Every structure is written in C-alpha cells, then in structure tokens.
Image 1 (cartoon, rainbow, N blue to C red):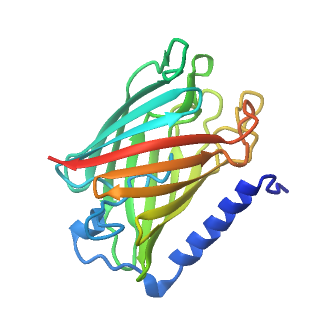
Image 2: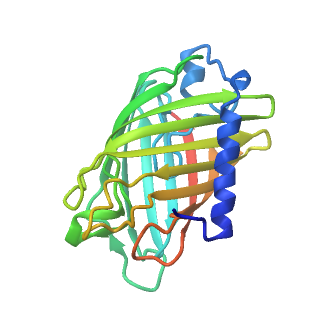
Length: 274
C-alpha cells in the first residue's frame, strides 16, 4: 500500500476530499437553464467554464467567437504555449508549441512540431446529467523523448470526458472523469482513465486536483512510470474575467522514475471574444 510521504501530498488529498464532499451536496446542484450558461458560466455570471483541470481536459468548451491563450512555465526552463478558438458553441480547436531550456543559458530544445487539439461537446449539461465531450489532443507534457516518440507525460490522444457542476451560496464546484487512448503507444497501448475536481470561491480563488491512472505508462521495462499514476493539484486566481493565473504541483506520488520530487508549474491564461 502506498502511503503519503510528504506533507504536501497529505494536503492535496485533503483538498480532494473537500472538493468531493462539496460537489456531492445535492442541494447545491447547479441547474443550468440555457445553452449559454451550461457552456461557460461555470463559476459565475461572467466567467467561462474551465476547459482543462491541470493537464486533463474537462467537458467545458469555449463559446462561439472566443479564444484563449495559455502560457506555461514548466521545469527545465521550459515554456509551452496553447491557443484555442471556439468555432461554434460546442466545438473548439487549437494548436500548441513549446520546448525545454527556453528560459536558461543553454540552447532551447524545441518540440519536434506544433500539436493539434480539438474538442466537441456532444451532450449539454442539465440538472440531472453531466455534460459530455469527445476530443483529440496531441500535446503531451514534459520533455519530448525522441527514442520513444513520446512526451514524458503522454498526450491524451483520443478521449471522452464528462463534467458535472454544482453551486452553493459561497462556492461552485465540479467533478470530472474521462477515458483516453494515446497515440504515443509504442511502449504501452493500454486504455487510460483520469478524474478530478475543482472548487471556486467568491473571492475568485479556487482549488483544483486531478488523478491520471497512467495505465498506458506502467509496462516494464520501457515504462517511465512506477504504476502509481499522476496526482496533480493547483491553485487558481481569477484576476479578472479575462485573466487567470494558476500554480500547480505535479506528480505528487513521484510516479516518474527520472525525478526525485514533484514538479512545479506556473501558467497564465487569457480569454477574449472576437
């Protein structure tokens, strides 16, 4: 049995429990009365629904005629930029590009190519049922490994995800769960599962946590993971309607074999309408 070995991990597990209990309150369930609110008024009257937990996608999509840009500062001096556009009220597309050693005194190591992302919400969320989306993401996280033709954290590839939101007088929360099949499958081609929860308070601060089982990265001897899965957690600050700053702690279970501690990331998200 795996026991938490760091105080930070115990704190994250406690946050997960709080998020789950908050979302399980049936009396706090958020009834979304129209397509506009169910699409992106997730945390309040003027704030769009999150399209992503930390690395894993949610069923939320951008509204038609809007875009978001995300810039991540990652370990090893890396940067990752993601641009997504809402083509319709249910369909968004995007591209991403980045590399390691970008912020350093060494030559940057760029990813081999731009990556493509797309997501379609096929079922709109209602009072009784979650929203459901299907999508495809080529973008993984961490370094690109040429010898294995994969990222350190594999991209989701083809996926399906469901999200359900809840609201009380003091906070809003949501639960997410999905399944994916990565195209980075030369070393392990298993189906994978992921889940998570988030909570946003009236002061524009929020918590988010996710767990990726990483069933597609535990096959010996090529696997980079130890079979524990990836537990990530973060804090969100909605500076204003269009700007959000996030800090994240990644791989709190120390699943990756090539690291000695968890990773730290900082990201800036800007959302705008055409």
